[in-house]
Length: 197
Image: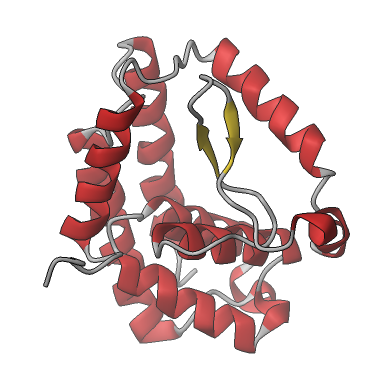
């Protein structure tokens, strides 16, 4: 298949994630080893998309679409790839699952400093709880989530908090420092522009 190799790329991603969890090095700032791997995977996928376009469910199979989506979601240091894929998928909504499109749209919005639509992107708040980043229209969020085949927001929050406990993820010791470091990263990779210019 045209996208056969992306399965092994994604395997490496998940294997490194498990390894970093066991070494207690995954959480906090974006791990440099993880960033390098996820960026390399993103660039490889980008070159395959240039050749063949986005994987086709009929030709390449559901699994290839799922792997490609994961690689894009994880390639957070490549704003251009995430934005481009989002535009492509929005113009051809049958090319992936509604859930996948919703999560990618939220991720691009949050990293671009905008409010998300579906509440899929979460992080630590000032009380040391995992909560969604700001949501554009909170009153409509569960309706939008239902359309995108996502569970109700409170259910997702609960399961993410549960996973954090399982994986021993702790809230940052210094939230201000954590937020500053995240914003510096967003600036470095080009999600946001320097406001001081």
